[in-house]
Image (tube, rainbow, N blue to C red; front, side, top):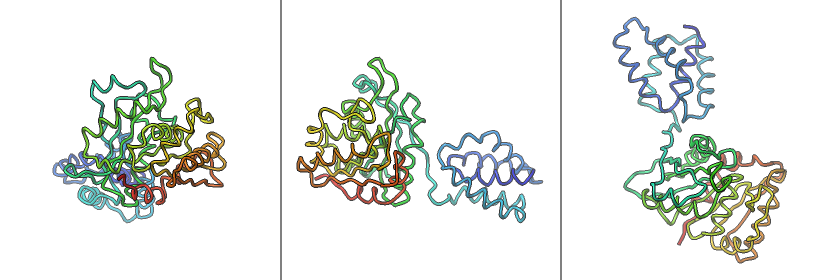
Length: 330
């Protein structure tokens, strides 16, 4: 077994969702007193490298770098010890992956553009206690009928909530279908109302603390859903969101109606001044309309040197989470 294989094992055992393998490995240990266990582990690692669904790549890279620095001092016994320790002492920030949940048959019939499956993340939530929920609406890159496609987008929100200790809470991520009998999919209030009806009936939600956020097309979803049914939400945080159904730069004919409804709920919009996909002016125009309608809790942050990818900053820093989780509907 060469050094690269040992390092690979170190990176592999740092991922979530693989503890079952090491239960098997421990059994092999009893049958392998001559320490043939480690090569067996390496073979399993090479076979299952694609299994890491729930850990960010950086953890494996950091662990791998550490292993390379210390490799000359590591014996197979120490590798086994490290693996055993990982069973009982998870790395900081380690968490389980999402549950794939689904709407019931009757509710599915009420939707048009919504995948009946959605992702549900628990951040330290207990079944017996009502907790806040964050609903994340994905961007255009997530449309389709493969629910796993949106996992990467919403995970950064889950990581941010964990990083800044805003749990316990739940995070829900629905998926918009790409093609339907009624045309290309988009976020619609009627579909999303059905989803929320299901969530309220099946999850221990604190209905005074339902938060809505989304990026790009998901930012549009925030505007349109909040613009029709603001009573659902304690706070809404659209990121680089368009304000019209016709495309990234479209403007709805119902802008004033949306604004009047959004004036009743706290709104914090985020945009990039150099965004060539959805101009920052769209978010600025909506916030101006909300304020004109009497909304005193609407604000915007425009990042002067950022473009359409500003969500990577928004969802990795404390500001949006501090603001969002401080809001509560009366």
